[in-house]
Length: 349
Image (cartoon, rainbow, N blue to C red; front, side):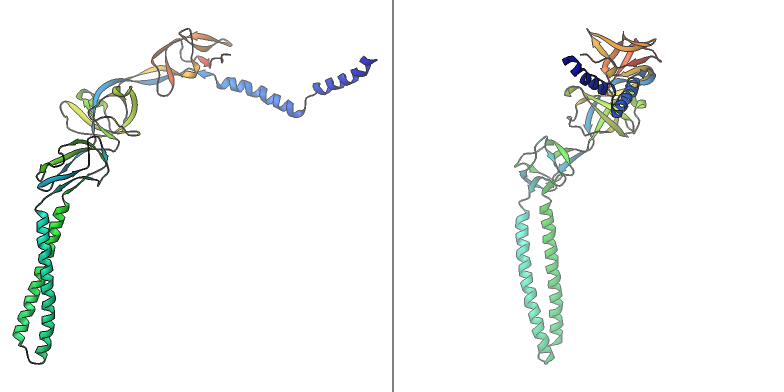
């Protein structure tokens, strides 16, 4: 009796479980359709591509532009605001050169100007008074005209003295040596208290504009073209690899080298004179390259899942060195041929 009472409930539940809802049926159908498409999307057909081979060429990094800070006065360096390696902005005060003879001359001119201004003020009053006397017939016209002439001469003398003081002040301001551009300070030639003459170099600069000047061997001149992208490798900086664009090639050889300016992506903080390897193209060839996700390594052997017949098998392959390039692809030396189909390796549990 107990089993007979439970059997209708069990039968009813089994019946409800055997008939899935329409929503579940649609989900199952979409899943069955998506699985083959996902598997198909992971299958890659092997094709050959053109590969450019590069060879490192030793070059030197030079400053794109250089400048100097020179003294324009005969005097003493009273302030020095820069040291080697410092980065300065355009217009920053690099140093101050003081000429001790300028200050006394300015003081003398200032005193002279004050005296001339007093004379001009007094003469203006005298002329105004004498014009009134002339109107009343108590002052000769010839003398008044002479006073007016002397007054004009005095005003011109005052203007000349003021101009002389302005010129001397401008000369004094030439003692402030300014940075010509945003640049690195590469060398400081003087110390505080040094006596300098007009034209003496106080400091040298190398501009900070992301442009480096490369000196390449003459034999590589045909391979350098303006607008071409090149790859720089810095051996002194853990073989850091940077991309640069040739923006200018100079028509004159210097010490057997071609000089070219290159704009480095993201700038470059290398030392001037530092050695750099320029990866120069030496030829083209056909090669097979695949994404690194399609290669698995077991026990030191590299495998790729290749389609043979209706199924995929793990086939050993030989990879070129260096293993992965900048795009994350392997070059296959042997084990694959054009037309082969490969898939990503099965994930390990």
